[in-house]
Length: 143
Image 1 (cartoon, rainbow, N blue to C red):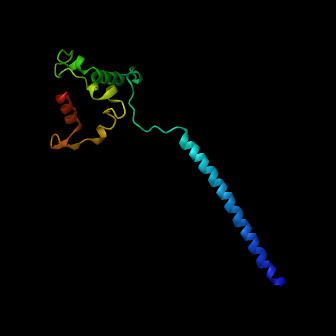
Image 2 (cartoon, one colour):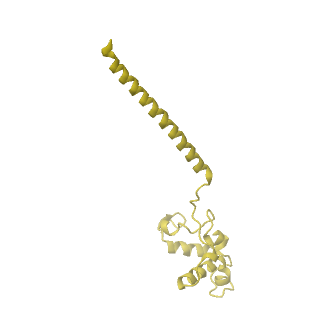
């Protein structure tokens, strides 16, 4: 009977270590789940593309001035290109901003955020492949 105490003692020690590790890992997992839930509930991450508004455009360089002018063309198309336009008389008086909200910078407002990366593409209206340049001309013609 004295020879059987060693395997029994080893079994008890191993069972104690396994139980202890299980309890400790369960507690760590519970703390990690709480920390993750607090992180998720804190503030959602905004991953929607947002363009700059006109006051964020740097106008101290030539490229900044061109960007500002492009924004002005989108916002005030009829002033520059309308029936009484200062540059040309090629549109019906509507502004690009009528369809492309906030100058094409508003998320889900027909924005310009992904346009260049999605062309050329097949367009059913033209029944063929269309480049970005053709798409802009098409938009101008319908305006």
